[in-house]
Amino acid sequence: MRLGDMSTESPFLRDAAHRPREPGIVVLERILIEECGEPIADVRERCPGVLVNAPLPWLRGTVCRMVSEAVARMPSGVRMLVTTGMRTLEMQAAGYEAYVSHLRGEHPDWPKPILHRQANRFFHPPHSKCPPGHTTGGAVDVRLVDDEGRELDMWSALLQSSNSTWPTFSRRVSPEVREMRKILYDAMIGVGFSNCWDEWWHYSYGDSGWAARLARPLAVYGRYPEVCYPPEFVARVDELRAAGQLTRLKPTMK
Image (cartoon, one colour):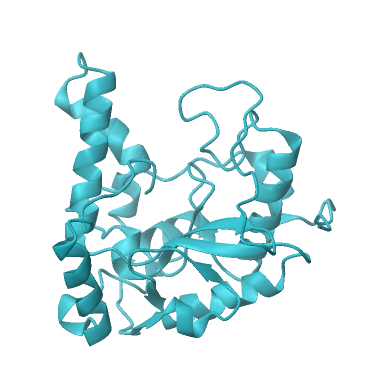
């Protein structure tokens, strides 16, 4: 596998030097949304060459195109794996409550306001004024894999502690992990995505988070209306619900 160029033109190196802070929910709720009405599309059909292991592998059409463009920027031997695309509001709510419960178990002395404040750092509250990115079709969680589909190391820490390797520019990760994150970041930022700086795997375009991070005047994607879900999407949601999998989300994904 040929690693990426470590030039100073790298968006990763540029942004890592500034160590940007992720905008909070209050900031996101100030972003105006002018929904453009763009439909969602199946990633598996629109993004050839991209591996997909997502419960609901749908994204807005423009986002699908951008994912394909990002993959084309990656070095040989590196491929992309999409692990999360769309979420229904039901899925987002279940994931949020699961994460709050996880924090409550770790910190039984925390009052409710602190629990929710900490949960909001890593999991967008489902009923906030601005819709969670994954409910808009503009947010995608990704990994890097090799040509055989084996995940490349994006996590390993020099010194392990809770959540220490989640932030994109964490200084606790190994040089090899930092290089993998650089490859992903440079490709995704290069085509117009923004990255959630608290979570190296979370990228978005068009949602409130994207607008806030890039100082755009408005977001173009609001929560995708359920009445516009395509039939195959609805069928997949029903399938997941029947299998009891619709609300099973890991509490480490935004």
